[in-house]
Image: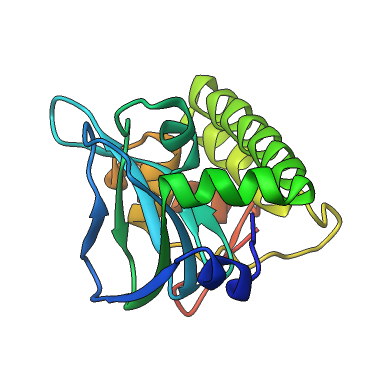
Length: 196
């Protein structure tokens, strides 16, 4: 979801710089702000009891994140950390709610944004229930290609570790599986770049 920067400022939004690797909020904290990325990239993730990270989503310029717990008065189920240096605008909850009341078209875009995120979560669940590592990776790569399914080949803009975190596999398994897929012609690896 992208709310016009000037509207956010008019409702009291404040832009803040973050260094790479800096937390914006953490799991089990009380939400107090609406966040929208102005520059950079943010990663939302959860961790299991073994400390393994599961990526819930990445958010770039003009994308907002963390709204559901804010609107539901629930604790954050995930943490948000910067992947790169970032500039993020934040708006107090009360001001955000006033903005939604004053701009019905923004409220409507929130609904579509949430519907899209629910759809993405359903796809993520499908990826995780696939039986073999190859099936998981193929399903994930097809999801990445979804806006343009006939595009061949698509450069996968993720590290092997990020792929592992998205699909719930160990990085070693991802590396071995990609090598096997490369031999079968299912993926291309050129200068350490991955194409599907």
